[in-house]
Length: 491
Image 1 (cartoon, one colour):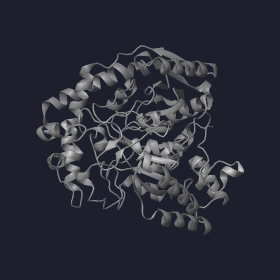
Image 2: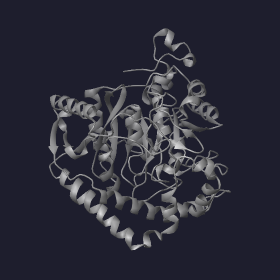
Image 3: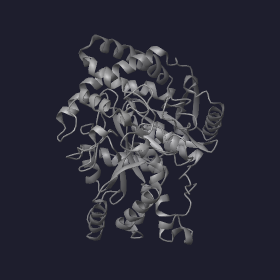
Image 4: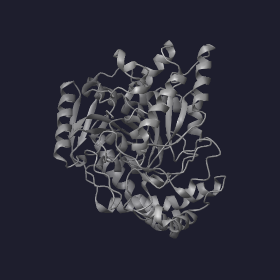
């Protein structure tokens, strides 16, 4: 495994040849905690020191929990008392800052939300705490989860600045869970939570060389998560290995998805590889061909599939759906959130206009303005667009693809991380794999498979609705064949 360079805060680990704490995965850290090799307090102190040293460059962490060390001490106390502990008790996790964590901003990266911290934990966060995880803080993100304006820049928020990619300065960390992906790659925490509407977990996972799972829409609660659209939105676990992500998903659901697939022999799986989901980047697609050949050599069956590509109408319809659902869902959230923040999308639009020198300095807020102007799901254009989207995503793409007897579909997530720019939007290759599962609400996972131009490339694994166990099992088998990238070295 490629590991981070030695760090002064590693407590001598680099000098002894042992990996520093920040280079260990969640399950490895859990084992170290269980054995008494390290305490949760020492681990949190190490990670806080690393964040203080490196995050001024990366802008991955938006806010730190003031009681992180108190949480860690409580975990150590539970262990010392011989309490029955969950498998991740005492392990730190970072949470995307569009999810309510008591006392932290839950801002969606917006200055309009900055002075009204979350008055409660989202149910998702309550589940993390109940499982004994230490909520270390919240991560920066693309403002309003990358659905504010047509030319938004992934990873930028007015509140948190621009997230940088730990692998190469000046490269995008993806979006909208940018800070979660970058923080994992930088060794700020072994686990993170992201959210996805269309690509927002798997994109930063791919660009930052980590693993991210967007589960089936509705599997994890979205109460207390700042919404875009209920038909698409899903929070999900992120980590540096498939096993770590599976363990975090189990903590969030109360069930172990790997239990139904205890044996991950590659001979058990049939993969479908749609040509329409290639990136068009020659080096990325060549790497994927090499990986698919290796998977065939390991005993997996890989079927080349012909499915219809996304056309402009699909994209227009999806934007229509998201705008109209946001008009209902985000307005309802803002009305119900206690505190002094904005109580409507219209108030956010007005705030941004009044603070245009910061909020609108790089791109506009067309989607927010469209949401204010429309009538939400009551608009007949919404129902027509949603019906066309579902007919394409399920009827023309996913159902026919799975009719070939495949367990999952696989495709490159994106090409290499593109240079960040604040004006003109993102310039990327790939991403075709995310649209159909986003519209259908089906699960998708991205895991790293290698490097192109020194930057990570992710392979996406798409499963049927509620097929997380299969997705994770196949991903674990793929990971065993291709290996793990590990952490990006940082100066």
